[in-house]
Image (cartoon, rainbow, N blue to C red; front, side, top):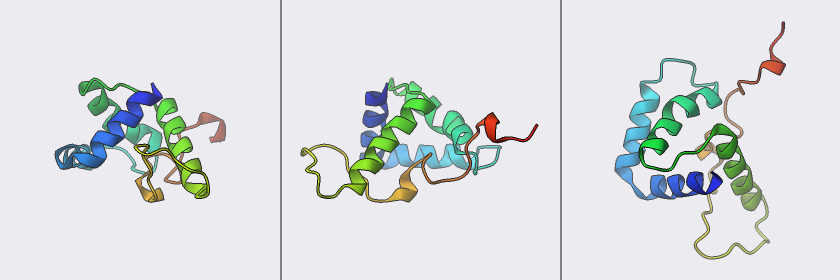
Length: 107
C-alpha cells in the first residue's frame, strides 16, 4: 500500500537507527547497486515488512512519483504535515540506476 511506503519513509526520516539499519542492509546487498528495483526488494521491502508496513516496488514507485511531482510544482500548496523531499538522490528508484525491466534486455 502506498500509505505504508509513506509511513515507512516518515519513520525513516525521523529514526537514525532505521537509517543505519537500511544502510547496513544496502552495504550487505550482494548484487549491483545500479539495479534499484532489486536493491529495494532485497533491502527496503523486508525491513518495511518487519515493521508492519509492507509495500511493493510498484507502490514505492507510485509514492516516489507523487513525491517528485510535488517537488517539481513549488507553486502548489502542500498541506502541512505532508512529506516534502527536495533531494532527488534520496529516491530509491526514480532517477537512480537501472530498471530491472526485461523488455529493455536484448534477446
